[in-house]
Image (cartoon, rainbow, N blue to C red):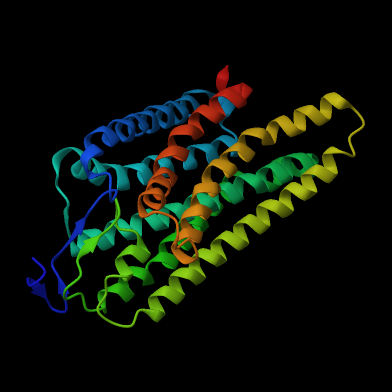
Length: 302
């Protein structure tokens, strides 16, 4: 298979799955399937609830619908191939299909981060500038923020597969992962990959630092405004509004940071642990987010 070259690369990659746990892949597929079903069911309910309930036709719930749609696409991009690997022993993936999956997954991850920033901005306006809420957060602005986040995600990730296409892949074609992750694919190239690595790191660092910085700034302003309130009930209500968003941030960024740092400095972390966390990052937050918002948001519960 490695000798079947087209232009300057092999035609297929071989996705191992989780190295060292091949004998229990069929069992690992069960929680993956459960998370996939929960993601589709939970996020579909969120979207349907917002659609049919006129009182939820507000900016916050529009952002929540965008997040739900993004989560379903993100999980589907990774989980469908995982089922092939875990249950049907179908490890091979075409070169171009692998690059397409890589682009979708990383772009959707950046889109997820952009939506969390937009939701933090919503909370900032709602708590710090409540009198101007309706004039600032219009439907037009919500739509523009969603389109800006999508455009940013697509165009920031697009150079990654294009740069990989120029690399030769002659002998190495085994990807020790459950999906086509950028660095896992780059490491297989039979050439200098400094440009690919530098671009991948710069995108990851710029997105994380900028988005987390904006979210942190928003919450500093929010806390300052909350503690200036004179009534305890008002404080509790304001903080309760942000609780589900904070939970989503922790659920989303924690495994992402672990995966990113493991690739760069975590040489002693077993590959199986790293890949499990990298897979959890794509499967767990999309399944948990609807539960968090369903439980924490009174209007959706009702």
